[in-house]
Every structure is written in structure tokens, then in C-alpha cells.
Amino acid sequence: MRKTQGFSKYPLLMSMAFLAACATKPAKEKNFISPEASKVPSNTISINYALRHNSYLFELQSVGDAEFSAKSVVNEKVIEKRKISRDNYISFANRIYDFAEKYKAGPVVGEECKTPFSIRLVKDGEISEVQGCRTQDGGGELGKIIREGEILFYSE
Image (tube, rainbow, N blue to C red; front, side):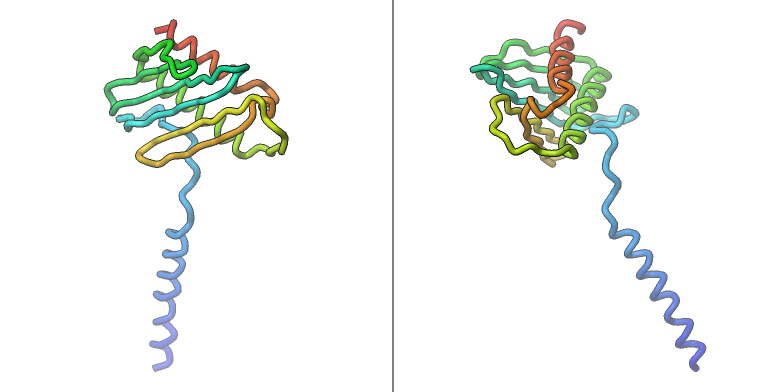
């Protein structure tokens, strides 16, 4: 009788180990959109930033897997809006996502910011936002991303 009770503990231990493995957080996504994705979900990525006395917005938008666009706005006035290719959309969306993830992981310096920015990523109804100061972006990475985004308008 004791042998039966001893063996009955093993399935319980195995099921507890299995549940513990399933309860762990999923791995962090490497890309905002996988380059191999068969379908791109509807999503929006926007970069808001201030420069001198103006406010700027650069926005990428995907409507299903059919329409991809980029928009540039200055002081709430649309300057440029164009459709872009699916490949350019995925590549640029992932570039912005990578920057946002690296920026989130970096140190925050508590000083008054004269050049604030925010990056908002909306994907599958989930919203992620990163706020920062361009002066804390040591390599000027955000400025490079914005220039590359503006090039999208003229390269298509």
C-alpha cells in the first residue's frame, strides 16, 4: 500500500512542474512586426517631438495587410502623407521599435527637458509608450530615425 502512495506523488510533481513552466512570462519580442509575417496586423506607430517652438508628429500606419502609410505633421498641420511599401513599413516600424526598447532600458537623467519626445506603439489593441528627452539620446539616434522617415516620402 505504501508503494502506491509513493508513486501517486510523481504525477502531482510533474504536473506542478509543467504548470510552473507554462506560467512564466513569454519571451520579449525581437521585432514589432516579424519580417516573415504572412499578414501585418493593423497598427500605428507615432513619434511626437518638440523642436524650437514647433511640435512635430511622424506617424506610420498599417490598415490590415493592405495599406501602409507614413504621415508628417507640424503644429497639427499635415505636411506630407504617402502610401509606402509593405517591406519599407515593416523595416521602419522595427527600427523605431528597437530604438524605443533600447531607450526604455537606458538610464533616466532627472533634468528639465527642452526637447521632449514620445513614441507610441499600438499593436493588436495593446499600447506601449516611451517618453524621453532628445538631449539624453547620446548618439542622436532619434534624429537619424526621423530623417530616415522623411526619406520614405521621397523614395517611394
